[in-house]
Structure formats: C-alpha cells, structure tokens
Image (cartoon, rainbow, N blue to C red):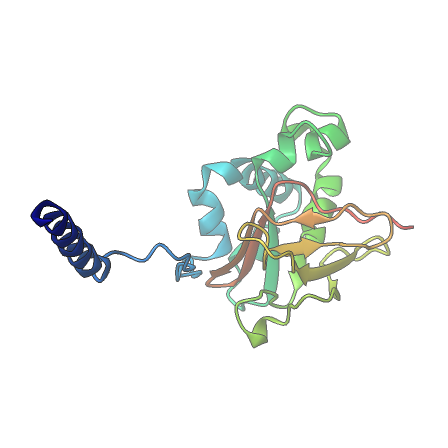
Length: 209
C-alpha cells in the first residue's frame, strides 16, 4: 500500500512540475512576422544591390545606350510608378523567358527597341500594393495602365486569395485575362523611396483571347 501511494505521489509531483513549465514555454502557434517592406533606397539602387536582378540591370543599361534617359524611369523622385522587376530567371529560364522568346543567349543581343517595349510594359502608372487601403489592390482584378503605349499593353493586377502561407496576398498579373498566362510575383509589396516594387520570375505577357 505504501509502495502504491509513493508512485501516486511521485506522479502527482511530476504533473505539478510540468504544469509550471508549460507557463514559461514559447508558443509555437504561427504568427506572421512584421517585416518592414520599406527598402530605404530608390528602385535603381535596389536593382544594383541584388545579384538576382543583375540581368535586369544589364537590360536597362543596354536600352539606355540607344535611348538616353531611359534609366531615369528607375531613379525618378516623384514615386508615381509600380515596378514589375524581372529577376534573372525571367531572362534566362528554360521556359517562356526573355532569352528564349528572342532566341538569344545574352542581353546585348536583344534589339533595344523591342527590349525597351518589354521593360515599359513592366512599369505601371500609379502605386499598387496590398499593404494598405491606399494600395488599391484586392482580390478582384483591376485594369492598370502601363508605360508601353500599345493596344497590346493591357494588364490586370489582383491579390491572390489562395488560403496558404506561401500564396496568400501575393500579386497576380493578368489572371484570367484573355489567353494570357497568370504570373505570380516571387516577391510582392516592396516599397522603394520612389515607387512600389514586385519581383517576377517570368515575364508578364498579354495574349488576346
């Protein structure tokens, strides 16, 4: 009887000890981190600091050679644009990349007028993000105006409403727009000192129905 009582008492003491520890344990419930979206630099400076945007930098400089002042679109101080920056995969990836589209192996082989049109299509008038009401983006697609003056410069933007940690609130471009492929931003909602930045791993294209 004493032996049985000893075991009950030991178990009771152990439970008391564990309950005390539970009060000081870290919570493992998922809590989104409050990451600062501000880059504290302009778009061009940001491009220069990112190895993954080295081909984007080279493309802008290539166009600048034949169209002086083009780079100023990325250094302007009015903060009136949203930039869809293309990472290196968008240029040299295996499928639907810029190199594949133009049948080239490097940026300098691309005709500067055609490359300029591609880059202009990836700059949108106005500030679009999902960080606040002022960002104007929600789950419904909205038509935006790009800097490419062409009937083929149609673009829509919306926020992904897929309930997952990896996709929720990421930017979608040209979702359900004609026969255009939907493009999901690799990184969304970065705030440079002169505009909003979203980064894509595939070029955004518009294909009519």
